[in-house]
Image (tube, rainbow, N blue to C red; front, side, top):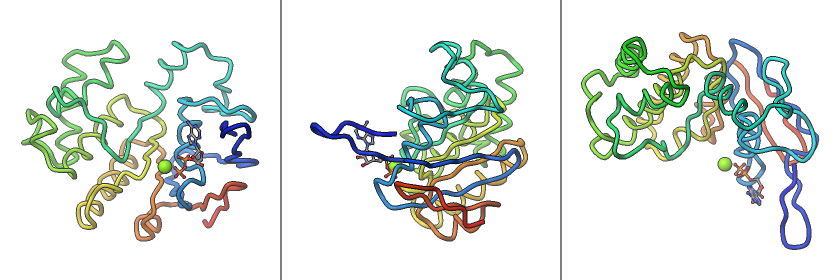
Length: 215
Ligand SMILES: Nc1ncnc2c1ncn2[C@@H]1O[C@H](COP(=O)(O)OP(=O)(O)O)[C@@H](O)[C@H]1O
Ligand SMILES: [Mg+2]
């Protein structure tokens, strides 16, 4: 992958090969600017690489049209970001339901699932709170519930504890690992935290040229 930079191009993720096996959790560490966010965006089909291939369960995504890609992404992938990205006007339950709404599926079954997921992440009594009335850790738990709403096969989390203090981040990481495992979603989590990185089943270190597997 390369980005324009003045009249040159900056190469990132040259020769990087990253596969995610079903049922695993993979932590990715790496220096700032080495391409971790770019890698997650490529895996999610949010960015297109100028060379190389991304495949979801064996299907290359390059050939999919824009709307088909968005539809498949909504079902296949859950996303968790460092800054939560909740919709400020919606309460926690409606933020979780938003994932289903994007697929046009919103009914009693989905409402029930959103309620259950919120309870699972420890927010049973916060379902009707808007993000402004939730703490950082609570907001990220809502985002974890939202990521899992559509029963994705893979959750991609980009520094999900980066804005949280140590104890709160620890709790969010626990919920993320546990709920992904229970829901049978693979997890790819970018983190600078060695303790968090040690808790995944697989670990890797990314540099501009390659992804080194540590386990
Ligand atoms: N949209 C973009 N346009 C130009 N350069 C970009 C863009 N996105 C990222 N980059 C550059 O690509 C490199 C990797 O960025 P990023 O994936 O955000 O790294 P990380 O998440 O590991 O900190 C950096 O040098 C960054 O400046
Ligand atoms: Mg980043």
